[in-house]
Length: 208
Ligand SMILES: O=C(O)c1ccccc1NCC(=O)[C@H](O)[C@H](O)COP(=O)(O)O
Image 1: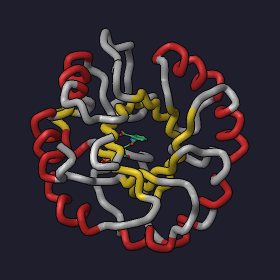
Image 2: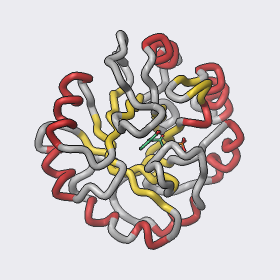
Image 3: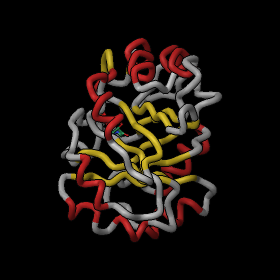
């Protein structure tokens, strides 16, 4: 972690791309999408997996057995859950020794109402833009909504963050803000990230 904020890059699947991103030396988490409907779906095990960055597997209402199989195969440190997975479901996965990031889709204040039920069973929350494809929309939600969140669990800010978000990110303060999640706005094509653009973003954000 550099400058006290977690940087997560989500939606990768190519060995060389993963290697060059990790070589920046400041990417805390790299996300792999295991949701077959996503254009970033990981259909085969990359020949290189992150050795320093934490490995995060992203799932949408997936069967627990499937998740634990992926967790073993990819050596996942975290699973990120993107639909209406219950607190009990999160808890049962955490008993398998997997850390949990619960994603919440946000479009208004009401979307934060049941977040408190997940406090004891998740390591992080991820607040993302509500969209029909469950994630990777490239659109921002109104971050002011998060000022009504006063829970204990730290969160990653997500949804449509791009190179033009720098000033807005610097202005956005919250006692539970743990870091930033970036994805489709830094892509050359679905599942392939523009490392140079990410480097420029992190430089402007004064992370590197
Ligand atoms: O990226 C996807 O295709 C995706 C599909 C289904 C569930 C989650 C997905 N992505 C998870 C993420 O953590 C993304 O980084 C997050 O949704 C923000 O994406 P973006 O708005 O493109 O920055």
